[in-house]
Length: 419
Image 1 (cartoon, helix red, strand yellow):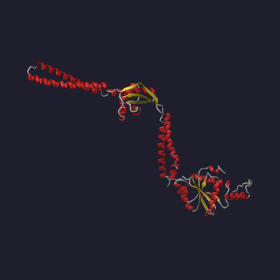
Image 2 (cartoon, one colour):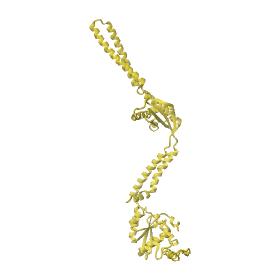
Image 3 (cartoon, helix red, strand yellow):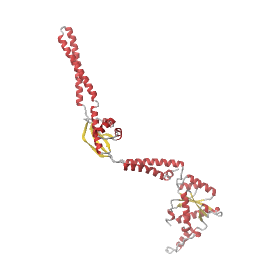
Image 4 (cartoon, one colour):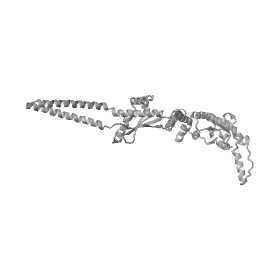
């Protein structure tokens, strides 16, 4: 089977199923978009470091830290309470809070989405404040504990050193004075070390980076509509679903892959399509019937719609269509008379002179005398189910009539279209 035949069976044969599977999700997306109210996004900027990050990785780390804190339900809940907004903190943290860095700078944008501009602005400002305070004070307790411990150690070391100084002044014996002096030197070294550590902690606290808000008024904008990406996704998913269903249907109920495939299967030529001119169809069937010695042409449809076309075609043929013999005689007379406009009136033949020796009928209009000289012209759309073709094959085997040709049924237009 060629790719063209495969597309003919799957796509063209189940075009309605594919169209429905594609349009239904698109319609649902459009309906939801029409019913949904606009949303607004408020943006606050935070400077996390005083200097620029040394690498993209560090900048990403700053943005990730702000996002992690901004999506913490506890901080979001405090921000909502402070802003006076009633909402589910977990849902807001999961779906309505985002953060992104500005290039490779130390500035991070915190975005909060809400249904009202005021609610979005108030929540964004409160949440940015909560994030900044946490980043500034989150490790403060550990630092204060360490600093208090060093202060106590400095006080204790100072007291011991002072005590040793007093003992040294009160000691008279030289040997005892040497021992006290040794202890005093050790206590002084310990005190010097603790003072250095205390100074380092105080210096680190003074020079540490603090997260600050860049501005106090959030920037509020209306969130862009997601109609186009959602529609594209709905179309893609619908198309995939439609093609999948078409493949399943084609597997369970296979169809023909076109009129040419039917012609090869039956071993008969395609004489034309029902959208062709009536005279063209009549002449093609008459000539093909004469070549096979057929005097009675039985029109047989594959599907029900083809049978309806058969009945309409039989109603039209005797009244309006001329035969090949009549056209041939008129053309011969015109050629013999030269290039003259007077070729005489075209006489429309009656049923008797339409096709001398040829009669058109359906399966149930064949008399006993005509059975020996009957032949079949099959009407098919080219996309019939394989089961219908099997039924047609059973009928043809039972009648043992030759197949004169095949007509492609393309609609009803030809019977009152061109004449």
